[in-house]
Amino acid sequence: MAELTELLEDVVSDVDAVVLFSPSGSYYERFARVDNLDVVVIAPENSVGADNYVELPLEFENVAQRIQFGIEGAIDEELVNEGDVLACVTGVFGEGVDTVSRVRSDAFTHTGVYELFAESRAPAEVIRDVFELAIELGRKGQKGKPVGALFVVGDAGKVMNKSRPLSYNPFEKSHVHVGDPIVNVMLKEFSRLDGAFVISDKGKIVSAYRYLEPSAEGVDIPKGLGARHMAAGAITRDTNAIAVVLSESDGLVRAFKGGEMVLELDPEEY
Amino acid sequence: MRGPKVIADGEGILRGLDPVTLASPLQSVPDAVGELPGVLQEPWVLAAFVLVIGFGFGLLMGQFNKRLLTAVGVPEAVEGTAFERTAQSLGTSTVTILARLSSWFIYAVAIIAAINIAQLISTENFWARVAGFVPQAFIAILIVVVGFVVADKAELLVSERLRGVKLPEVNFVPRLVKYSVLYVAFLVALGQIGVQTLALVALLAVYALAVVLFAGLALQDFLSSGAAGVYLLLNQPYGIGDEVEIGDRRGVVQGMDIVVTRVENDGEEYIIPNRKIIQEGVVRIRE
Image (cartoon, one colour):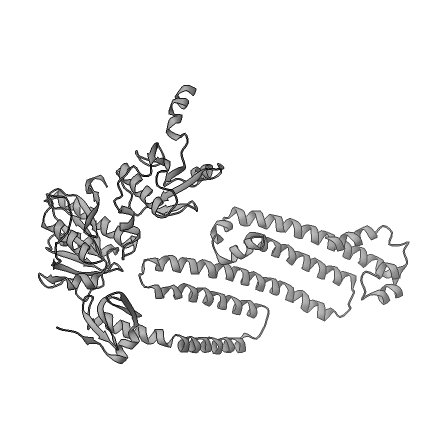
């Protein structure tokens, strides 16, 4: 077995930092005790009390996406430098740590997925709640027939001024927030509503049935996506909002910020 | 443990010693010893014996209580309460304090019993009252300690319950619960040691009233904003996305909560207390 250890040594030799994804407390301690080793923890919450910590708002099932998010976050928080070689320790199959991968921090094209959560007008929790809503809707909708939905999050005042109602607003004078338990009950009603949902910075569902009227000039989204995605891209370019879209045709959840697509998730994986 | 040992060691050489040197550690009794050295021999030995037994028993009881409290899960129950944290920062713990308390209680009883036996002070009436008072005092201390722990625990429980409520204003409630429990604990403790609590209840009520009044004065703006906020949230005379002018500030409404309304125009975000909105009125701009 000594030979195998030597063979696999290449994976972790000369790395600049170790990136731990959701480590247990004792596991982190073992790394933290090693001298001259930079340890970055990426987890939903900093339960191990690490100094170098990046919040993971979504448990990305796709490992490449998880690592990409973590590394973009770590670069953004200046915990690692661009060009550093990192050993990423994460779990692929179930709970616990089972995978080590060697990644150069500039191996990815910068997508802005970290900024989507950390530097939007709305707080990360609100954006996470909206993502969970879209993912849930994507899964439930597919049982019967696929549904589409468009959530515009943050900068609600401006978004409301750049849109018009398609029908009476069912959320008028209500105080429903995206994180509320009632929202899960309302999910199957959601799938019937046409138009966009407008959600405020604080997570309040301001309106449904909104027809977005931004100018679509200079919006650069992948070809082949429909009118809903175009509207989402355009409204995020015109305002400081972000948009989360559940596609009716392929069932994927996509996020837009600043007129560009920054994230693509498959609800079936969650 | 120092006192009884000295006396116990002194027992053997008691007869050979000059009475005055013997009595010198206990300043208050030189006369009694000087007058009747022969007669006092018996009670002295007995008193020392009671002291030693009492201290030994107290020590044992402390250890036993500590184990007992640990065994029934008190450390887990009090974990995270402010009292336990304070105790930890002082290098001790709730269980240790409770165990010590029981030891001290027994020490005190032993000392009183010894003093009684030795007949250091002949006024029996006084010592009877002290002997009656000591257990009450210890029960009072115990009530205060338990009161602290229960108050902290109640605060924790209530704040856990209220976590789901989205209003930040409810954070006040757990603290109120905590101090109410403490207040009751103190009153019970004072009642236990026989202090006339009626005046104190009245005093504390007046104090509480004063606090409420001052808080009311200090929070006046918040309260009036909150009252206005309730009206605004219920009736929503304007909504997110409306263009409004409040005073001389004009912009698009971005959000509102109980206390403030956020209005934004290009590059500027105004956070306006709801009180102002009721006072100055709102101009809704319809182009």
